[in-house]
Image 1 (tube, rainbow, N blue to C red):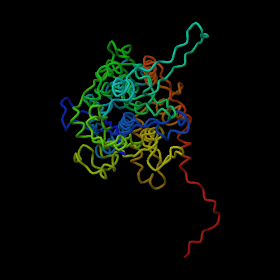
Image 2 (cartoon, rainbow, N blue to C red):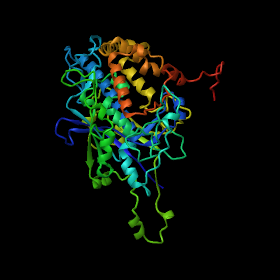
Image 3 (cartoon, rainbow, N blue to C red):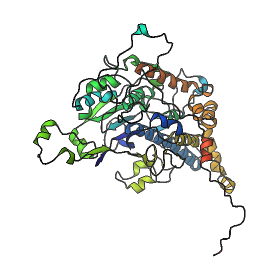
Image 4 (spheres, helix red, strand yellow):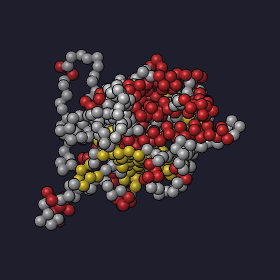
Length: 508
């Protein structure tokens, strides 16, 4: 049985002229699995709901970006020890301290978020196959032995319906009724598999044209400037249906996002146009021959009918080599551009071909099965087995950035100067409301959605997302994994007390 994989990477282009020296891959992921709806309430922030490569690559990009913020802060601290000046050269080619703020942002939030992506950086995503969902429906139809459209379930006569104040959204299966176009879909799965509420990659990427590539935790530190949005989605030429992509992502006559054309949420007059805005990305192609040479792990092409007829008659269909999608995901991120966090050589100064052992000391490297790190069980999630991309670990990373880890005993006294400098770094970050939200939220639900502790700039993000989901229609939330706290997870990781009360004889 031959296993195949989908590969996605996120790359940063630095400057205006693309070359090997200006393009840096910052995250890579493979994968094509997701959890069923019934599994979500048991995740407790420790299990990844969606392990499709596109989604993992975006989460990995956000993990890398948070580490880059941490790297800048630690570099500033080290430079403070070496220089009496209050001005420090920027230590990251990708992010910088925020230098401008929207004029229409409330005055109490002018210093927030503290970072922004460098304005000369452009973000690209490369995919070895078309995103599942609406952008690949024409490809699905072309691959069918019988492309006859399925009959849609008959609609009830409105006259026979009782009046209702609400209409429950309906979510189509991943590939079901494939001739029904421009709709929100679930992730595709086997017909006998339990249903999921994870939306297709086409739908999630369409939404990123409004919210940027920044996830919620990252958006608390990094401003949504134009540089935070995808510039282009790069696909193999045979995986592109221009009609499908224009419909799934575009704002033209056939585009399902056309109602959002020109929409802005909190965009100011600063040079970097900080704020949320519908920014459609381009679709770029890569020649098929080049893709096949560079990625031999792709899904094998189905032989055409004419090719089948020419095959030797003594080779039965049963004996032909079968293939299936792998249930394993791999995740990789680049090292922080500054060596301050890891003590290792910065990523951009290493050889372009480096050993995996050297890379493992810096960026994130994981193998994931069923939403947790390989060797762990998704049915019994633990903090140790959780991916660094999980909700809990991303929140922990963010909290670690805005609050220094406490030092004990001699460690505190020996590092008192370092500790005070770290406190100074932290005080320069969030305002009181934002910092309180990160550090003191009683649950993930409060951390992400509590309206009482929600700064205005966070409300703008939520408003933009809700309006985009209304345009897409039938966006059913995948809820159930919000009622947990970091404190409760910390208790899970504590060793159990020994029941032994007396001394233990260790003599031989």
